[in-house]
Image (cartoon, rainbow, N blue to C red; front, side):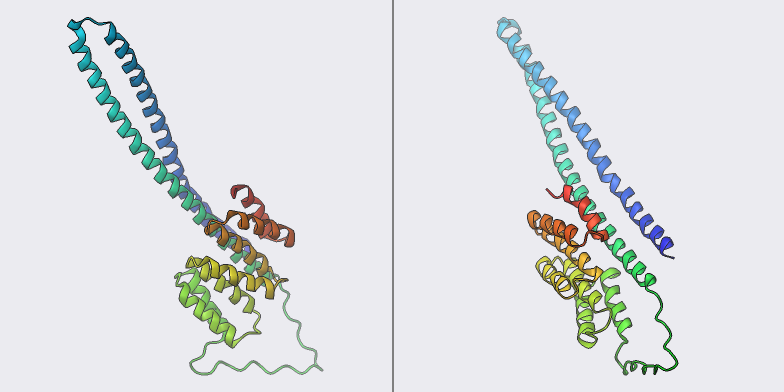
Length: 273
């Protein structure tokens, strides 16, 4: 089941990468067009210079004709300069779109990796042993009263608000309610983490950093601590603080060297300079 999920998730990521190739191809085409325009412009400039020298040697009889030819060439040069400026503007736009798409694909890959890791963690846990005959069976947890949701349902509601509908403010309220009503639940660490993701989705990067720090301090031995430190680095990077982003990635590699986030941090460090 895990292998099948991984194939589905990575096939989605691969599809996203194919889409991402389009802006890159457009960027390469624009760069080639700009190179061609620059070559044409250089040729015309050399031609103007040559004609200017010839103009000095001409007698008065040919001056008028040469002056007209030079005016035509200069008009052609102006047209080439306008074309070059247009291509440069479009190229800058494509570069920005390409950079934004790479960031979005990177976040998509990170989210898919987190989901896969969570699923593997749940499936790898051995089933709880049956209680011995002499051990009294604990009473079942009280059912949620009318109007209240069971903890698992409340948690799933918050997760859907983050991952499916991107209603980050509502998601934070649901997770905060979950932590208030079920502070000792085994999903409390996940709820704390996803509050940080909800802040990140709303581009409230400072709040996200503080929330992820709460995960690291309260649940330092939990796998979510590595995920929280990794997303802290992304939050600093989104704020333009590349230095602190790199420091966090390096700390992640040292503190949680066996985590999948550490492997991704090693890949990301050369890109963040």
